[in-house]
Amino acid sequence: METSDADAQGTVALGSIVTLESASLALTLLPERGALACSLVHRASHTELLRRPGSLAVLDAEPFTHGIPILFPAGRIAGAQCTVDGHTFHWPVNDTLGPNHLHGFLWNIPWQVREQTGHRVRLEPTDRGRDAASQAFGAEFGASIVYTLDDACLESRLTITNRSRRVIPFGAGYHTSIALTRPWLLRLPAGREWEMDRESLPTGRLLDQPATLVNVDRGLSVPDLVSDTCYRPEPSEPNIARLWDPQSGLSIDMEGEAPLSQWVVYRPHLGAHFVSVEPVTWVHNAPNLSLPAELTGNAVLQPDEERSLTYRWTVTTS
Image 1: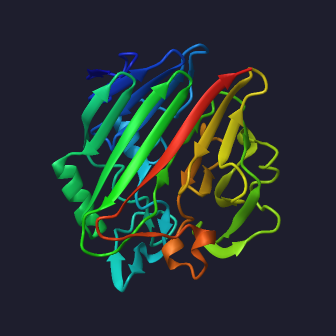
Image 2: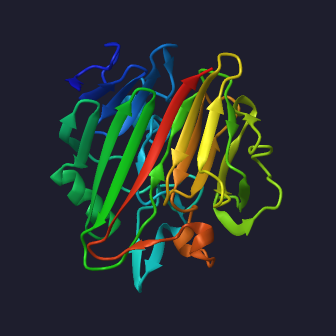
């Protein structure tokens, strides 16, 4: 692991960075910017797989759509509030589509390295970051994340701990933004798309036929896609999203282990040079939907309870 004041190419300042390298991959992290995985390079093909920010100013202008921001609570929450076990959580309105809360309190706080061994690094929020996140969330909670590189595999394991005396909502995920450096095809497990309203919130209805992600269970062309859509795979299917480039044979398998049970696919317009493929534990606005938890992924953490979620990338060439 190395720490520096410049990015891996030494061309633009990204603040203090941490790098991990394996035979196949090179990972760059920004601890002070939410422990953001801001770059993942496939070394043999010299391909940047993530949408990497060119500077901190660029990152600040679009904080959710560079690298892999950590989301807790994840997604959109209608009216920026939800009620759990009789207590109403009120969160800041920060959504351009409506008076909603978006993506939680871990992505923009400072983290620090707590342990480093070989190709593995564990980070936790600084005391200042943890206090700020807990205050904004409305209850004390802890977080840690472990990144591990093993040849062609990147594994990220996020753990959330309820350190308060009340029940808290649990919804987490990874806002993964992939650079369109290749004409990627995207495939998700067989499942159903959620019907979305004008604020890109689920109406509560699962569609029999997809409205946006047409043929996504077989493979759709990302350059032709515009989407801000939630998707629920069938529970019997392996929860693996695949991006692949037929021309070069490069492919990325993105596996979300339970409790990651839903996906969000986001590309704002045809000119966007990225697509976000986001594994999350719950669909947008899950705490406010009057639907069974097995459909929405809605969940809570009891006092002193902790839960972990593992997200794994495997990068191969054929």
